[in-house]
Image (cartoon, rainbow, N blue to C red):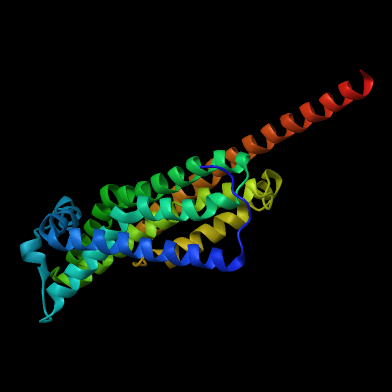
Length: 260
């Protein structure tokens, strides 16, 4: 796509309206597909519980009359969001691209690709590593308390969905930091100076994000978020070094032009 001339404000609003409409259509289409394929998705949601050593037939209960339908709708929306995410990002990119310069266009695809990969990576990390450990912790805790593990299916589905979405969003932290670094709002010296503050903020954010208050979930979210913070610091440092090399080359070229 090529760089376009600036559009009037009303045309931007019209473009934004179509971005929202197309994104909602993609989300609806993905949700419909997931609604039809609820049974395979339910099997996916129950896998962490089985990995924790529990039998869903014995542990989970349905108490409300409409609970199964509510759970199916919730699962459909989450699955539809995951399926439609690449299309939604494409529509957003299509809206942003006309206002970008050619140099900024080169960064667009890596940024959106990284955002998708980080979101999916957060979901996979929560699904395969954190959820089984968390469920096993609570089940063992119930046994230690002398309480029988008996959860409602709606409560379990809400817990799993919140964990998956929370970790998917939490893993977007490096992308936000890198974008702020590209815009010149953050730099490596600031990130290093406020590292301790960042650790406290990460722990507080992890406590707010995780639906449970157990220390295991808090640790499992805080530690990778801190590692992602350090990784984003290295990326920002690399961006600054490339900018410095580019600026030095520009100064040298100007000197050569002056003295030639």
